[in-house]
Amino acid sequence: MTTVGELVDKGDIPEERKDSVKTILHDLGYAASRAVGKAFLKITEKHMTDAGMCIADANAILAEVESLQGRISTEDEAGPSKKPRTGHISENPLTEQSELLVNQYLFKPLPDSFLPSTGSQVLQWLFDFTKMKVPVTPLFYQQMLTLQGPQQCLIPVLVAASAVTTFTDLLQTVPRLPFNSEQNTTVYVCGFIERCWQTLATYSPTNLQYDLMFNKTSQLSNVSSHSIAHKLRPDTMLVAENCTLMLGEDKHIDLAAAYADLSRKRVDLSGMHYGPVKFMLGYAAAGTTVQWCFLPDHADQPVQVMGDRLDVRSAKGRMSFLLSLVQAYRLLAVMSAAVPPLPGRWPLYSEIERENSILLMEGTTVLKQIKNFKKYEDRQMTCLAAIKRAYAAAGRAADEAQRTGNPQYLVTCISPPRLVKNRFEVRTLPCGYASHVFSEQDLHAVASACCKAAQVLHTNKLVHRDFRLPNVVQLARQQYMVIDLESVANVRAKRLPENFQNVLKTCNAEALDADGRFTPLSDMYSIGVLLREAHVGVGSQAVTFIHKLMGKELTAEAALTWLQHEWSP
Image (tube, rainbow, N blue to C red):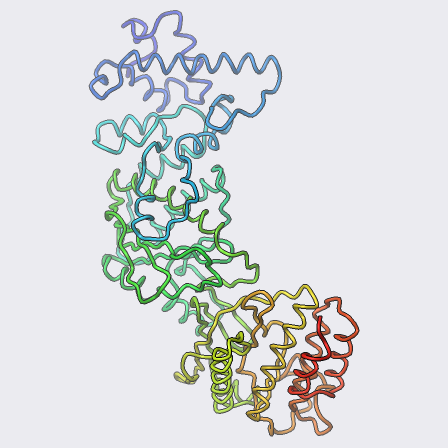
């Protein structure tokens, strides 16, 4: 191994710089006898000139680092220095430099008004590596000099930086898993993505607050919901701003099967939730092969393959995957900033576990399942026939609202509810978001939706029995919709048992009639409680309205008249 002394004897390093070179290497945390120190010294050997590094270049690097150390000494004597401008690495090499390195070498300026909408536009962005350099250790850089291509996107860095360590490790580590199962593919691909994006989230100037979720490792509370997740949820999901922006599917060796899974799981993206964002980013992986995909906002449009297949067994494949992940991270940040701000939004393919059911968000629809439905019927004192009648009535009401140009106020379903081996299942729409009631105008809109829903159900000899704010979702500003029709029962249902609160947990004795039955006026009482407990400052008209509801003085039809003529916020 060539030493500093031997380089001095050969004339590659001047005698007067010998001690300075040793000091610099040591201060960088790499003594000349250690691996990276050796790699740096080897750059100055004459046989490396054919690889494009001449002795003058190597000495110039040393001189640059030497002058850097001189500036540091001057600043230390003068006191603490100000934080350097972005892109200028002028702090002590022993301090963390990742933020400056990532910003300088990986984050080129975004185009003006950047938000692609087509697969070709996303492809162009993902694989445009112009002016991008991955900061790595000198030793790894030296190893890459013998290869054609990958070293062009690398830059050796001799400063302390955890980002350099992470990027070097990702690029130099050849996958050694047996890849004999789909799980192995997920472990490697998702681990690569997570390490890259965690580094960018920590050190980049782009503020992307995200959750990266892996279906293979999710721990769900019951067998029924686990089967839903395994079959219908993607293997990987990225969620930002409560909005699912990326899906991934992993397979053992069959990339076509991963494409097929992505195709089956794509859905219509709700304009309410996604706004100007017209796609989701996707990837398909099988073994050591990764392929980026474009998922349009309409389910009837095919998944588009973007770019070449990336084989992460090769250094070139890992390099392209890493650089495209940096571009994808920045694209996802733009997408998350563009979606409408809806704090109560439930992400696509997220699961909501309720006391008796599990909900799976499917874009514009929601899949609702209740396991052991026979037990549910007995406990809740309802029946499948009543629930089907409720959804049928809701469908007719939605058609009428659409015909007259009015907003929908009662949830509907794509097809009638059904039983699958004693498991209740229904797909409902539209997919709203958690209600926010801030003003008297909001409260009036909630009251209107609830009373209209009650009128539809009562006209069809049904009662809802669970009017609560969590069962009222928001569709737009001051537009609300009543959900959870699985709680309905026939108006002529039998008297509730003494322990009825075990059945209707939010109901109290005042809601029932003198015979202990839940009647249409019980629904109106519950709507009054809902409005009172919204805790919104209201005027005397609203107070009177709520009092009349809780006094069981207003039917649904009378309440709607009251809302139209007596309470006008």
